[in-house]
Length: 415
Image: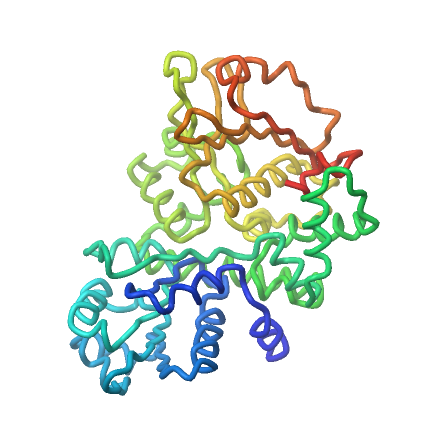
């Protein structure tokens, strides 16, 4: 375990540079994301970065009950643990800030009275807690960053310990004519990522057995903590909803249908979906439409933020090309990649009342954008199926990606 921790501590996430750039901004820096995504390691790395720059750094974890109790008594008890220096701003790194009774009040008071002396960089395991306990928007006082599990680029670096394969992936993506001599190796890693996902500890685990054991711990013990801290009382039904969502990845989510299947109210279903999103397990992708009469659907599509988490719920670890749900896997991967590139705000899907659909649509304010269709095999792509979308939206570029492709430039890996 110590070897795994050392390996992860020496590798930087993409988000590291954005956080490092924000350290000297006035606003406090808040990092939120799923459990076990690497927030504590990232916080440690930021502390090391600041110390290298000869800054005054203090680190606190609110999993320490004595620290938590003092800060809950009054925000300014922070200075029991932090030494201020005249004329110099100190940096305070706080892990698991959501454990405070009132984190928004804590940050607001310290900022309003002491921001010239103290810069807080904090992590929070669950956006659900950040949302519910942050009663004040803290506008102008904080910037929120989200850290997900590893994307495929980061996976390659963590998995191999070098940037060589990731650089090869960049060459594949940037040059349509390039024919990589390492394509088979890249696809092998890609299969592994689709199966076991991007939790850092899982990626660097040495054997398949260790990867599965770690994933089961994450989807068991850590999911139970999410349930407990989110005040979910019926754990069994919550799990049933999550299992059903895993089975219908990339499909429409009908709260009424889930309600009938599980035997609980639609209000309870909607609360479960809210918690699952706020704990960074799923994303409900909204539909894209401009003509409500022809493109009538309000139901979202569900995707998982980590495929290893999703596959463990189903206890499915077969190679991708042997799986009945392979189409779901590669569409969910495409969601993860597009979320990383573009964020969730402008990412949609398109579906008409009569069933015509396009997997992903990226829209712009100028009425232009891109449409992307994902298939497991390029031979299953039928251009005529997307004629209606092209007629409705002639200014949208249309792209097609497949997992199995005869050319690099149309490969899903090259997305």
